[in-house]
Amino acid sequence: MYDTILGSPGFRKGMDLYFKRHDGCAVTCDDFLAAMADANGVDLSQFGRWYSTSGTPVITYSSTFDKGLYQLSLSQNSRSDEPLLIPVAIGLLDKETGEEVVPTTVLQLKECTQTFDFPGLKGAVIPSILRNFSAPVKLVPSDGKVDESDLAVLASRDTDGFNRWDSAQKLYETAILKVINKESNDNSVDGVLETFGHTLKDEGISDDSIRAYALTLPSESAIAGAVTIIDPPAIRNARKHVKKAIANKFKGELLDAYNKLTAAIEADGDTFKVDGTSVGRRHLRNVYLSYLCSSGDEKEAAALATKHFNSATGMTDKLAAFNLLVSMSGEGEGAREDAIQKFYKDANGDPLVLNKWFACQASADLPDELDR
Image (cartoon, rainbow, N blue to C red; front, side, top):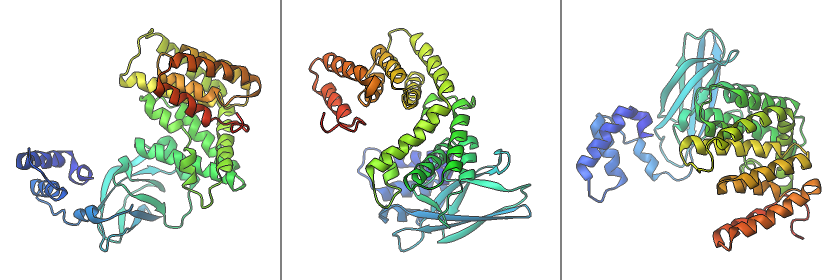
């Protein structure tokens, strides 16, 4: 947050002064704050309230647009008796085209409620709030309603990687919750499919890890945090329902993308690389594999996962395939048993690897898992 408030040059000046004053000394958070404030000639006493405030602050927001003027109202709520200084990085996207019309701007929320004006706009806009996770807060609309069409635009078009991921997660979560609550969710699923398809094909995403995270559905534990009464089977089944819909819609595209990454990885030979590009490739390829094994075709899924498992040159790929194989039944039963035996044999008695062997089987998605 210091970097967001002061800017990178200001943060660097603060760090230089901090080390000049305290290198080799025992220090406190107050010493760090003082260095940042003194180096930049600013008063950060209000920001210092963060250090004595427990819990996660909540920011609620609402907005209006009229005659080219967009107004954004932000309200903060925390356990602090007085308002915190919260840096809120925001950008605006055109509601129709998804193009960015206002680049990232840092707003300083210093009062309980503040309204910020953005004049001179040609049409309605969608706010991209808390870009780059500018503050560790929870952001909720003031009316409690999620605008799925806005989330779809942000998840597909936002120039900020964090907000693009976060919007996709909220969109996926909304669709899953509607399945759990047995609500009509055709529009939600359509939004999910559109967002997923755009992210899958977007050539503007150069980092495979970013694409992998953007394509991954929220975890069961994350979904559990969004419901009042936690029903684990309902959460798992709803998540599987949405995942299967995605897998069947984009099966061909997912397989093509999977094969391209496989060819790129095989071109490296047997050398296991740990550079960022290679790690991203493996991550994304494993995400593709997970979807391809969720389409409902057990025989096809078992063959693909087995090939992935047998050709793995590292534990990341091996575990990704093994986790899928241990949950297979029917036409995938044979592949499941073979993988269990092979993984155990390859572990060669290593306790850490055998712990993975037990853990994967214990968490398998099978109706008779306890009996097994």
